[in-house]
Image 1 (cartoon, rainbow, N blue to C red):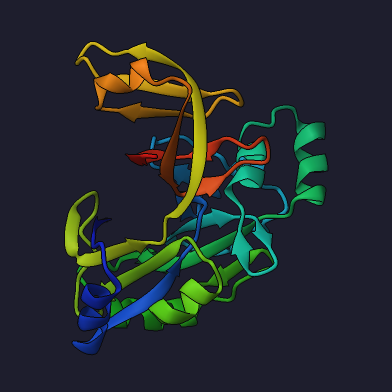
Image 2 (tube, rainbow, N blue to C red):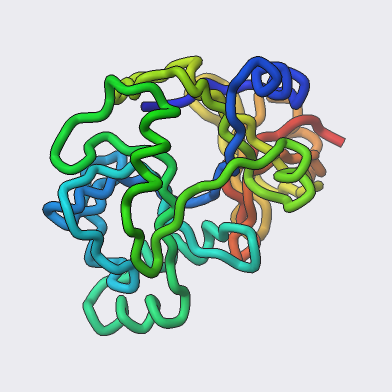
Length: 246
């Protein structure tokens, strides 16, 4: 089940006022945990369970929907998680697990004690989640407010209809995501011309972003206001979008 997007707090708050719930949107990797087979299946269909030995196994026959995260204080840190996702060999995985322990943040359930739960409304699925004994490294996503999530500098929020069923693989208005993108000024020094006659600009530290203003090539180097989701430890940006040329 996938979410549609909204761009403003006012739209999100209007939905919340009409009975939707609001949860923190963590910056991690979406997975479904098949507890019977002890598998973390990501959106590409891969099993990433062996990379997270620090998350203890849940007994029983459940399918839990959630986000693999690594936390710095109260915030999820995708740059640290990406290190763990690309670590290979058992010894290195165990070292990274000790250095950067992960948490599986659960927000929904598709199977409970062997029975399909996707036709149940979200409010009933949430009650079933409360009945599962969660081990170390697994937590339930809690409700929040847009204001609080912004104050905590979270990635964003998920706004959900409590009466909605779980529609596997479908993008729906029953789930709405509101992302809190960040902004910064970036100096781009080089460019490439794309097949659609747009430009891909690149900074000295490897930040790359698409620009539709072909005239920018005559102004290099150029400073742009860039919107992005998060920043990696090496200074590169996740999902950078050029808002305007300064």
